[in-house]
Length: 139
Image (tube, rainbow, N blue to C red; front, side, top):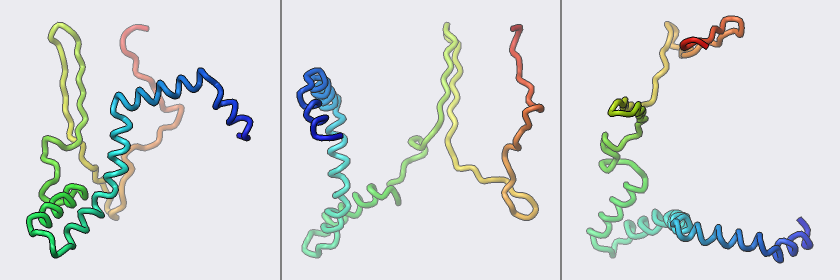
């Protein structure tokens, strides 16, 4: 865009009002604060590393820095407990107290292997002429 195009945007009052409204919305719903905190958090490991390496700091502060670094890295004894791991939840409510609730913990899948220790294909491709749709009831 050339300079004239930018100048036209600068004097476009409806556009300026919409941009201002979006800015206010992001400030009020906390999105701006979360983004700023995320940018500042990037510096945290460096600061914690400085505290950890400084021999003049008290041992308590150095141990606290170790704990925070471990939490930042997501390793060690502070890993998530089983009840906070990723899971897939299915809720189907049919009304009048009839509902289905199913929770499945997400785990990495290990591929099945053949006699030569090569991974097997989990799904074989189907040719177009082999496809038969399932019908549910009368159509």
